[in-house]
Every structure is written in structure tokens, then in C-alpha cells.
Length: 221
Image (cartoon, rainbow, N blue to C red; front, side):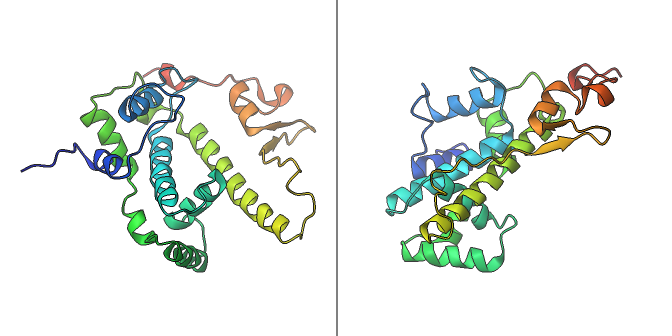
């Protein structure tokens, strides 16, 4: 008898009862398609973004079921550690030990995570969804910048929270954390955020705005 699930995404969703955000109408598949195509959103999300969101929902569900704190900061930090993304092996081993104490098999948890190709197949083959602009032509760089900024902020917030608990930095809980990345013009003091430079297409209006940014969807053959 064949599986009743179309793919790993559907199987993991059913196992952990993954749901879309409460503000969203419709089921998980509708939410994934709408976010991917940009329906009702300011801009479409990439497959990488959707994959990370899905995997973090899996981790969050496991944490809730075992009474472990599932704050966004912890989920982001632990997810990166479990994936081994730039985290020393001893820190990952520490996390696995902590999870084991809470009754969670960290290694087994990672096997529940899906990859980008799996999410892509689910969208395109299982759900028959399409985008006006193929993934190969989207500006993935903007997505990567957002992910890198969020990951950096999560790690920094986690460390600062710990330092505040240890009373090593008094007042850190009330302080405002700013983690924006900036680009500086080599010719003058002009400095803008990476996001601002992306939106306007240049770093400095005086020295770098002569050549307008080309829309990748309208490149000539």
C-alpha cells in the first residue's frame, strides 16, 4: 500500500502538525504557495526562506512538546547549531546534551528537517505552483542578506541575554540593539545601509548613480 503523503514535506507536516501562522487563512500548503509567489505579500519569498521557516516550525513543535522554551531567539540559535552553520563542534555537542536532558534526540530532529530541493519539488510538483519569474532569475542576494542579518542578530541577542543574566552588562535588557550593515563611499563620507543601497541601486548619488541598476527580468538577449 503506497504512502498517503505526497512527499517528505507533507509527511513531516502531518507528524508534527505544522500549521501556518494564526493570522493566515487557509492551510499550510496555501500559505507556502502564497508566500513563494508573493500573493498577498510585499514580495515573494525564496525557497531557502520557506525551507528555514518550515524546519524551525518543526523544532518549535518539538520544544513545546517537551516543555523547552521556544522563543524565536532560542529557535534561531539552536537551529543554526544543529545545522552546524558556523558553530564550533563543542557548542553543537553541548546543545545535543541539553536537548537530551529535555528528552529530545537532537540528531533525530535534524533528520526531520527538509532541504531546499525538497521544498522546491513540493511547491512545483506536489502543489503544481508556478512563479512568473523562475527561481534562477530572482534576486536571491537580497534574500541571503536578510537571512544573514537575522542569523547574526539572533546569535548576538542570545549572547547578550546571557551576559545580562550573569550581570556582566547591566541594563542590556532595556537597551536597543541595532545590527544594520552599512556601505561607505570610498570618495566621500556618505554611508548607507545595505538595504537602502539595494533599493536605490547605488551607494552614493554623487559618485555611483551614473549607471542605473538593470532589471534582471528585462535583460536583452
